[in-house]
Every structure is written in C-alpha cells, then in structure tokens.
Image (cartoon, rainbow, N blue to C red; front, side, top):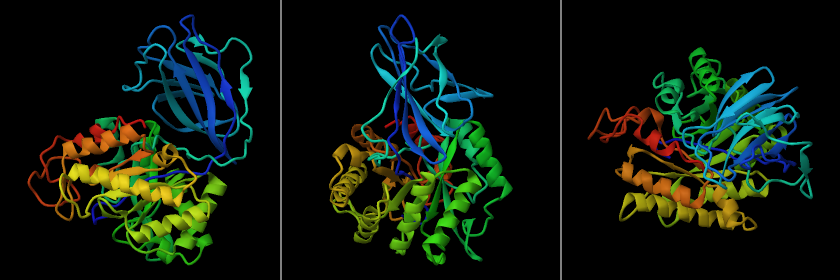
Length: 437
C-alpha cells in the first residue's frame, strides 16, 4: 500500500459448534435463534438471528442471562449489562424487520456458558426446553471464519497521531470498529511499539481503546505497512514473532490481526506464527496486499505469501489495497475490476472453496480522496466499491484512513490529515459504516 495507505483486516480458523433453536416469542410468531458460530479453548462467537412473524418489527430488544461467562466484543446491536444479565437492542440500520424477514447480531463470550432465560421484546423466547441440533462433526474447520467486533467495516486509523481519537470518530459517526496502524519493531528489536516508537502501554492509546470498548467498540491490530521496521523482519523466529503478536494484541484487548505486506517477509516464519495464533487463541487473521493492476490483481509476491498460508492451514481474509495501481478508464470501475481479479487469484489458491466462501474471505480497502500516485477516490467511486461489496457479500470493507476523512484541504495534495477533496467531515465513514455483509 502507499505511504499513507497502510492497512487491514481478519479471519480465524474456528470450530463449528451446536445450534440452539428457540421457540416463537410472541403470538405474531417472532422468533430468536441462538448459534455458536465458532469456538476456541477460552470461549466462542455467538449469534442471535431474530425473525419477524406475521407482522413487521419496528424495533427489537433481546435479553438473556449468562452465568459464569462474560460478553466481550459485539456487533450489529447495542449492549447494556447488569451483572450476568445482558440486553441487546437494535442499531439504527437493523431495527425494522419486515414480516417473515430476519436480522442478526453477534458477540464474543469468554467462557463456555450459553445464554439462558432469553426474552425478545419482553416476551420469553422459548416455551420449554430448547432443542439442540449438533452438526455431524463439531471439530471441523469452518470455511468462513468469524469476524469479531463486527469487522465488516474497520477503517484504518494512524494510532500514533493524537487526533482524531477513536472515541471522536465513534461519537461523530457511530462507527465502532477500527484497524490500528501500525505495530512495528522498536529500537529494542522484536519488541512491538506503535509506529516503532510509542510504547504499547501508552496511556493515551490504551485509554482511547478502553473508552471505545466501553461504547461497544473493538479494534484490529495492523502490522507492517509502508515504513517499517516490520516485526516480521526483526523477530528472528516464529516463536519470537508469535510472542510479539500476543503482546500487542493483549495490550489493546484484541484478537484480530492484519499483516500489511508492502515489502518481502519471511513468509514461512510469519505463517507459522499466525497459524499458532489461530490454534491457541482463535485469532482472526488478514493479509493486506498490493495490487499490480486492475486486470491482474495482486502482485506475484503477494500470491506466494497466500499460497504459503494456505499450505500451512492459516485461514486468512485477503484484503487488496485498492489504491496506487495502474489503470485505464474510470477509477471506481478500476477498483472493482482489481477486486474481481483478486477473487480470481484466490480461486487458484483455495480451489476447494466455493465462490461464496471466497467472497466471505475478501476485503476491500480503498484510499479515500487523493491517492499517492495521482488517482482520486471520490464519493461516487467509493459507492461503486460499496455496491460491489453488497452484491458479493464480501468479508470486510475498510479504507485509509479515518484521520483523512475530512474536507479541510480541498484541492490540496496528498496528506495524512485530510482527503484533499471537497467533502463533509466523516463522509466516507458514514458511507461505509452501514455495510453488514
């Protein structure tokens, strides 16, 4: 990616778990269905699917008790908790559910307990003992990994810069998931620091992340980028790199990592460390990759890195940098063509996966406004990327960067603090934030 366009995202190997079906919650036939989409040693990812009955829902509230476990990140809902009792309510974009239609929200749980005493809009979800349906195998690897913290939309933010803060953006837009750029090697070598210089436990950053989490947000950690020094370069073994990854993830309470490859890396060592993260922690992993051309897709080296990941059993979300590549015609169309070309390359890397599975492992990351090498991503271009995401149900949408999402320098050059085009503040964040897959 470009100097200012360094980025995101993530997908984890997971275990297919049991499904708990809950009986209708009202005379209208509204229902709530709980499922464990994936599990790992210390917890699981849960989801409730809410289906309207014979009349439309104009809002919903789902509550349950969870004794002996705790709720972590969640998405597509808001949460209030009191002890073991947790209440989820709809977001602004998924409260209206047509008769017979469904919506869903997800959350991470630390512990093995499952929800009990479920109520949907004040009415008990079930009328008796819930039935449990277990798939043929509970130890198979999921083809489509979880996206903790609603990483469906996760704009990059340069966390080394004091403004805008995560909470500033969340307050202004409602966007609550961000990709923190970048965790790098430091003067001590294989000891991660933000931007290579800011300590992992920097109080400004930690307080900002914690305040975001208090609002129901979550973060993805990005490593690599355009500048370095890469952790992947300065750590001398897979074990050392694994420990560095754990340190930075634990510092901000994340379980999702993005490796932004803009230089060669020791891919065997890196993928070994990433595989261990997935095996021991259920970590979601994404690779952010350079694009060579609108019809070619990723450059050959990026493909080699992903081939090695596939050979080692690492489940990754592939996040092409839709920026700074050669193109002809309309720039928005060129970004869509590059995404399609990337999808074609993914088919050769994972030939056993269906198109739907591959699309769920595809991310899209443009650089808003002026790009480093001359092209400009306008609002209309961004809508073309978003329309492609919706039509193909891709796994994630991001952009570089939240700190540039303002119109303070229209007609200017490329800047890390503004888009260089005429726009309202947070216009791109507000454009992308409603994407749900």
